[in-house]
Amino acid sequence: RSEINQLIRDARTCFEAHGWTLPPEPVWDVTDFGLGDWRKAGLVLVNLADEPEYCEKLMYAKKGMVTLAHTHVKKKEDI
Image (cartoon, rainbow, N blue to C red; front, side, top):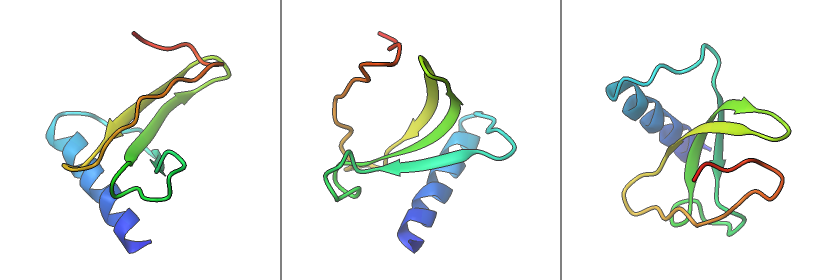
């Protein structure tokens, strides 16, 4: 868990360094895309909006992490 907490701290630092203002109580998520190894295929997410048909997230990945292509069938997707 301490590695996950550090990853979230790294993401927060990156967002703040680039001028992104986070919500007062951000909802964080670390995903491994169901593969069981977030260090290789992972992503840190801050949920900004999560509605039945739409979601908005800030995403962060450290160097070496792969973000897998994926879609959400029931959500509107930006292109």
